[in-house]
Image (cartoon, rainbow, N blue to C red; front, side):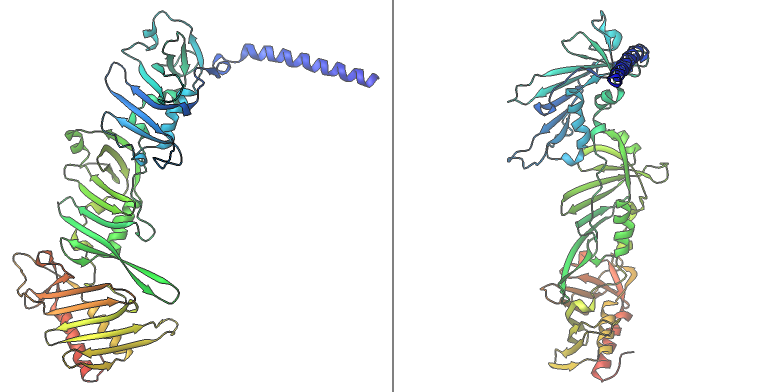
Length: 503
C-alpha cells in the first residue's frame, strides 16, 4: 500500500511540473512559431478547376486550369494547363508545363495557413499593399457542377518586420490581414514562367530509334534533310534491325554516324536547359538572344514533331545559348556546346558513298561501261570464331554464265564497291553533270527483305563522277567520287573473269 501511494504522489508532481513548463514556454515562444498553424483556407483542391492570377493595377491575367481524368479525355490522373493571354492556349500541351508546380497553385490556395494574424480589421488596407493598385488578385473557381464556393485571395506587399518575413494577404470579403510565407506567395507572384517545364529537349532513344527525320537550317541558311531508315536481317536467333541515316537535301548521301550522333544528337541530349528568360519576346529581344541569324532544327520523332530554334548571341558566355520550342514563345537559357548549329552537308556526308554490311546483303547488281553483272552472296561467317559459311557467285548478264567465287575474291569485289569514297569536288554550275545516263550503277538487295538501294555515278569531268542514290534527280547531286575508285571495280571483274586473285 505504501508503494502505491508513493507512485501516485510522484505522478502528481510530474503533472504539475509539465503544466508549469507549458505556461513558461507559451510565454517565451516567438509569435511566429505560435501562429504558424493559423488557417486561412481549408477546402478541397479537387473541387476547383481554375485559378486566375491578375497583377496589380493591370489587365494582365494568366490562368491555370485543371482537367480531371475521364473516359473522354483518356487521362489517368489530373492534368494541368496554363493559359496566358492567348499565347499558351493548347490544353493538350501538358508537357510544356511543370505539372507539380501547377498543382501547387490549387493546393496553396485551398489549404493556406498563415504565419501570423497581422490585423483583424485595418482602417487602411493600402498600408499592406492590399488595395486595387498594389494587390495581386488570385481567384479560384469551382467546377460547374460542384457545390464549392468561388473565392478570391489578395496578396499584398512584402514584409520583413512583423512576425517574420513573408507577404500580407486577405481573403476578399473578410476583414483580417494575414502574413503568409514567401514560398506560398511566390507561387502566384513569380509569373507564368515559373510553371513552364525546362524538360523540353527531344528524346532520341538509345540508338536514335525515336528519330524519324531531322531538317537542319544552319546559321549560314543551308538546309539539310536527314531521314532514318531501317533494314532487317535474320541471324538465326531473331530479327536484327539495322539503322542508317540518309541525307535527302541538299544532296543524296548516307550520313556519317559520328557527325550526326556525336556532333549533334549527343550534344543536344547533354544540353542543360536552365530556365525561361523571356516570354513572348519582341523582335529586339530575339535579336539580343541571337535568334536573328539562328539555327533551326525540325525533329520528326516517333512521339511527335517539334521545331527548335537556336540562338547564339555574340558575346554570350562560353557554353551558353538559347532555345525556343515550337510556337510557344518562350526563350530558354541552355548550357552546353552549340557547335552543332553550324553543321553542313559536307561535314555530315559519310566517308563512304554506300554503307551496307556484307552479311546483310543477298545480291549486288553491278553495271560498268563494259558490262552488267550480278553478285550473289550468302555470308554468315564469323571471322573471329571461324564459324559460319560463305557462298558467293557472280553472273555475267550478257552471257548468262555464272561462276562460283572464292571468299577472298567475293569479299574484295564487294569491298571495292562499297568503299567508293566521296571526293572534294562538288557538282555545281561550274561542274555540271555531263551525261544523261550513268556510267556505273550499283544496286544492293537485302536478305529477308524487299528493301533495295541503288547508287548511280554520272560523269562530271574526266576524273569525277557525281553520286546519286535511288530516285534522286540531278538537282540533288552534290558529291562526287574519283573515277579511280570506280575503275577498281572494273579491274576486279576482269581479274575474276581471267581466273585470277584480286590483290
